Image (cartoon, rainbow, N blue to C red; front, top):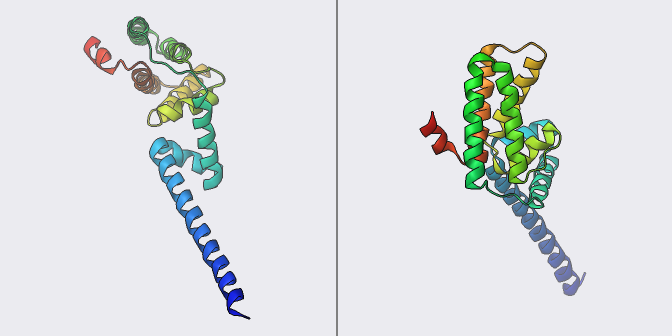
Length: 185
């Protein structure tokens, strides 16, 4: 082989190595970004899907989907109205915990609609919420599971109390009313 051929081969090898290193760096940065953005939801999706690339692709699809929504904060009037509704739901829990958790779930759905989230089936709702509220979405799933168990007559009062706590966390995140809620309590 002549020198020119060796230089061309060496150039291709160097370019291939740089490409592999660059691709690896890009993948690592992508994983770090998604892990930081989604927190525990990243680990959950990885566990469900079983493959990092596919899990990350699903999380990126969620981000893209949310990007098409016209999400908006609540108006001050909406915030006051929903805070008052939440107080009523909390008060009902004492006499009728099952009805209160059903009302809490409905109230959260109403807030999501007002904020611009499309409210479809529960899993899609939870996936949509996970993009902007990744630390709370697991609580939302837990509360929903308890509400389903209650509808089958299988949830204890303590479980329903826990569901209300989970719903409250999401309520506070969706309404940005955490300070007003603490003052009103």
